Length: 616
Image (cartoon, rainbow, N blue to C red):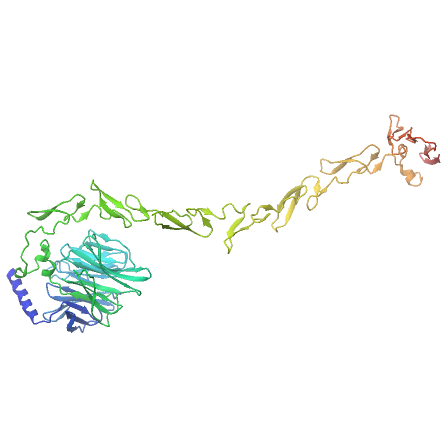
């Protein structure tokens, strides 16, 4: 059986001797263009194609595999280089034109991506998988840019704008191996010869764009940048492909395919040719003639690919199967194959996992201490055992935080705030009595006062001293109102109920009904002390004899105060300048006798009064 396979392969090789030479194939819309040393050697028309979106190469069966999108269908074809025949391998409905296909010759799996999904389909006739339109392998959160297969390790890799991830070909052991975020991440490739992955990043930096090709171990470690292109306009790049000696990609701005030597220290890329139809950065239409012998000539441990090479084409074995097998440890050979004894701080089947793997966050640099424990040297602005804390986190209370040259947090405060952490509000406690503070166009504090207050800081009560005898308040209409204390009235409570109420020296007070009442002095009577006790209403009435008679009426002269004794007889209390029964005699007597007016009051039996006067 094995000898038959060797004969078939040799026959195929002989057939290829009459075929055109090529080292790179580029897909057009309906053509496959084959180049050798930068020169077009053959163009193959594909009549059944509508738009070729992806190209890959099967070095075991010497065929080019490509996808063609003709809405609503996507078809994966093979083009046999020996017979130049095209065969449809799978057709699937799709609503998306960006379809990328890769091939694993070990498992004979077609692997392709559409949007956020990765599918597989076996083209091995002996496979028990009978799915007619493929099996869903992985679903991701973000849009999938590109995929690649590690046939030796049995992994599928994929790339998004945020991460590079991988999983086994059955979807298990999924993990993120590169988690740096960039402006856009384009394309991905695997190289068994160098045991590395390659990808294209684009970032916006210092007013321009920087496109770079980066490389890392299969586990994402030991990242290096091998090519940088800086432009003022945005660059689109895709279709990253690897050969034994070169890296290829397509630049959509300059519409061409570029070549870069893998081992070049100058990192100078060369433009090979231009194809006008290649105007979409999510197409992957470049593949290389990279034989399995070339891929694993230095990897004796890749038994899966070794078994695909005919014995007469296999390279001579190296001195040891352990060569380059254990990445960080010592190798020994057992019955089941090579095994590794890892160095302190490393683990994994091939000692490929460092204790530092994903230990330091936010760009921190990890190293192993004397106890072989991972320790982190954090980048500026981060702290913590794993650099997990941003020193700016919640540092600036009202502003933006940055890290100064000393690695300390520094705040740029919002308008209206100050202080080391922007913790001081310019309006804090500025407006009194619940006034509302704000900043005007000149960033000066102004107050909107509540009802009843005025002033620059609402510090003046408009009620102050407004109500003379009462409490002041502000009505809904904004006007001042007074609630007067008992005994006062008026708009400002300025009117005392007792004011000028009691006449003739009477003393006013409020009664139980809060009404004014008078306590009259001697010689006066009435509700307001308006009636003199000396008054005789009959005499005032012109001796008409009407009304009551008071014995004290005009009895005491010269401001003397009259009162009645126990016998109801009038008695006078004279001022200091007068004396006499009726205060009629001046204390300061002189030669001239004063005039004395005598009023005689007699009562008749009928109660009528008779008035008489005598002048002395």
